[in-house]
Image (cartoon, rainbow, N blue to C red; front, side):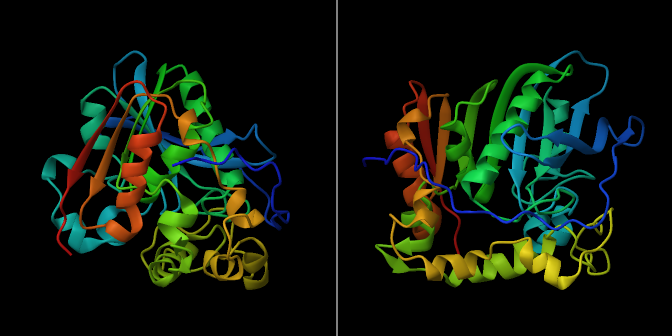
Length: 321
């Protein structure tokens, strides 16, 4: 597969409307859990104006440790058992804690094994203000900033790994191609690598059944400023206050609309998200799922084949539908 060089033209993004004043929401808890828990740590973005907020989980009584970073839409504060109760019930108890979350590493397990975790809310989601624009170049650049921030913290050895499933895997390919400082390894577990071919338009044909479900049930429900999240047991409300519905609409790019309106890979919408797979150079383990042929498997195979990494391996699992 020949990958296109990154498209230099960007789709114009509106400025987010944020009438509520931003505040310092950082809280540190060193006593309630087997690990140190820092909630709502602010990461100032270098790639553009703005910030994202993350939770940090790190071992007690240790020196600097390597860091696992995730950045995505599902809510750093939404517990796994609330997001998907049936799936959570099937998880190995060793990977359950007070801060388990959907498709990301569990802090109880990984801090016991000498790692820190940084779990960031993607821009425009959870407690991170800004434009909700999933899988965009802009949000990938923000992810790059979070990786570099994690590498520079005093509790970090400077080595950062990426580990996550599905969305948290697909985003790894794009951020690794940007070569952020400190990135040392990645495990994209069931994650597309080509936004157009793997996700939106299979063979050029619109494939949006899953995207509609995903957007309406798992993403827009967690938008920054959306009222009623706590009442519906979907994580905490936005701590700086709710936004009006008109403001919420202005602050998001609806992927269900964008995928239907843009048909061709050369459209700015799709081309702006592309990157050269050969620029991925860190060691990687690409894990595919034979049961996820239409959404992720192609991405894991193509990612493994075309990544420029000297050290790379692949694995496949089977999850019956």
